[in-house]
Image (cartoon, one colour):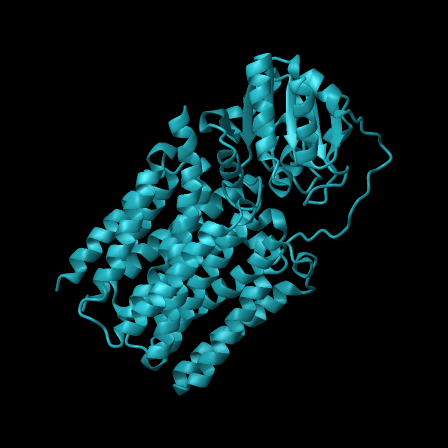
Length: 90
Length: 442
């Protein structure tokens, strides 16, 4: 069990990290970035796996979140592959 | 307790993954690191094995299969709606978690449920709009600002009731109202504002993770959720600046334009593809400005072919100029050009290329309109006034590839169409470009 103050500290520090990490991303990669962070936001799946909730809802949540995660990764790596193709060609 | 350490590793991996996206060269390895971090985080939660883990793994495998197949099969032209609907699934998952843990009566879990429900229904509406279901395109709601306020108020009220009476029925009411709220927020927003909406919804799904993380005392959810939430807001903010609007304006006074202003009495000059090809092969420098029209017609391959012909056969300097809000999601044009194998060294952002238009012979505007409208600079009464634009009008000659003289999404006439150095090429972006290619090949 973590203290609430620790959680708030983690929260605030992560906000700063997110802010500075995203600012450095080149505009050309905004689309893959979006679908990548979309995939990562499926992290709520953890809440369902470790959650104390009812099995039925956890089951559905895991199903939906895993579509989000793996679909997002598939889409973003497809986009990134397009960028990679030319990089090697040049 | 080994779990916090594993969580720390996967947080670092995910941060590194985003950091690696600063250049197209390193982005791919970044994605691999990110996927590694994510899978590590998911697997570590199966130690110790939760109850009924077989079912959870089954759900995971089913979802993953569907996700991967859909992600790989989807056409390039429908990527924006794919991103939107995937985001919706994340929101729905959050709602399910909140519903499962309803007996916890945790306020932050309710926040997660509310934001998740808004994300879900908003993303579904965004998907329908992007997919082009006509019903969702033309809907305008009267008094929609007050409807949103009332819905928000009712949602908060039902949350309070839920906590006062500890009655799960109020929870369902709360979720239902948030779903409605999501629908009403996104429904009146037009196509050109979609990049902003998609990144905002993306941010929302991050905030749901944060809320659920606080309820479940989970540092990974809080950390990653905050990074995504802030990242989504940063992205939305960049788009908002590029459109000279604000989130408040967007949500509470969306400009819906159903009026189709037909071409005024003024006359625009048109030109045949053959003549356009002739002018282009005799010029020294060409800047191509793609817009949503290019995406709609999937003209990027024909365009790339044209640029190659001009460069190799007639040694013309060809560059691409991309406005931040061109297309339907952030970076939409970059992805399409990348798909057609255009090297990213030839693609420039607004502020890097705007000064070059004055020394350009031909600006080839393909399927874009509002982002080139000179009224945004000069005409204070124009709704576009103040929006940064690509200064195409400074080029010696401007070619507009459009289907008609109709105004763009903003409903504002573009005076550039009637400028003496502007020539219109009427028709589908792909067909026109292919015809030009034909003449260039001869």
